[in-house]
Length: 165
Image (cartoon, rainbow, N blue to C red):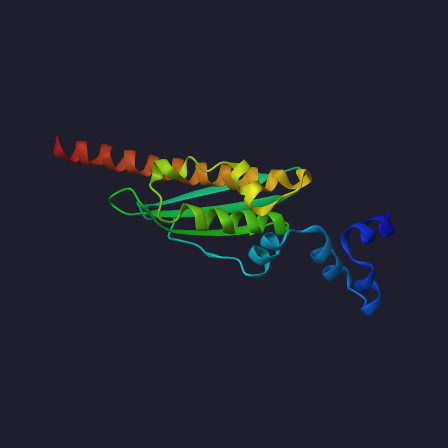
């Protein structure tokens, strides 16, 4: 089986000119270059202040594979996402999906961010069918962060009404 994979992934010239280490072979063979780029150079890694009223936090996980993703958004007073951060424990595809999601939601309105679908993320990263759950996790994390942000905004509005009574 390994020979079949090698024949599909590498040219015979590559096999003659040098040996690939296992991680290098997997990178060369199995992941699209965009996944590798986001994995090796993840964008927007980190955290925002989860207690801030203009920060929404989404924490989602996939029990089947053990991937866990935390995605946070910071929204300005006009409803525009001005910052996004993530922390992901998982495979390269999960990290790449998180990284790409944060890039895409920055600059969008809260409503526009809801239009990002897992199929868009999977298509952009050329994820194989076995890794589609990673893009689904990223979409779920976006939705969870937006829902948390909206709950905080409703709570603030309710407090303002109570204070004015």
